[in-house]
Each structure stands twice: as structure tokens, then as C-alpha cells.
Image 1 (cartoon, one colour):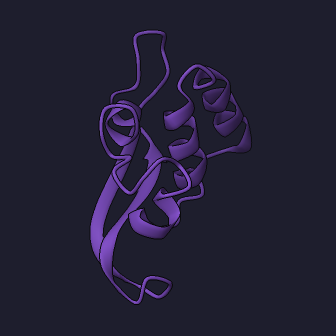
Image 2 (cartoon, one colour):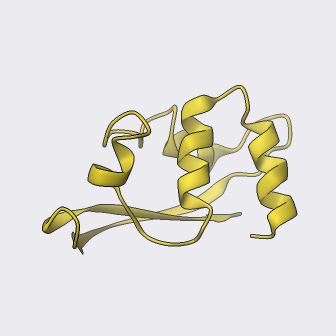
Image 3 (tube, rainbow, N blue to C red):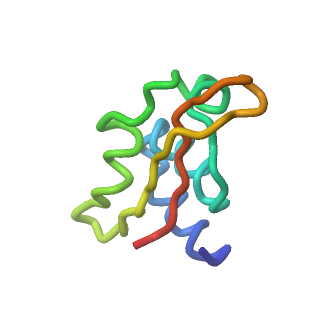
Length: 90
């Protein structure tokens, strides 16, 4: 994702604060733990319509969606296996 594309999507998400927070986290193309990194966003349950699902869909105004992968991985911070997400613009 280029910096200009990231900035463009961030502007489009201004009215969707949860989606913006999830996007900001996932836009670095690194795996993120839902438990310890998701809690500052709202909760570890940010995958619902206001978070990941909404980002995957995109919108009618032309905002592209994200391809988001989810996997169970060992988290070094949580010291256990948790759900992790990574994102990329479609």
C-alpha cells in the first residue's frame, strides 16, 4: 500500500472511527493480535460489521475494500495462541 493510498482511505474513513482504527492497525501489512492489539480499538471483537467486515466490503462512494486474512498464531505478548489479522487493499 502506498502512503498516498493509505492517506486517501484514512480520509474516507473519518466518519467510521472503528473502521479507521482497524485500518490504521492493519495497513502496515503485519500480523496483529486481536487480543492485545484489538482491545485499544474497542475490544478483541472488532471483526464485526463496524470493523473488519466493513473494511472488506468497501463502500458505494468508491472506497476500495481490504483483503484481510485471519489466522490463529502464537502471540509472544499474550503467551498463547490467539486470532491474528493482516490487511491489504483490493
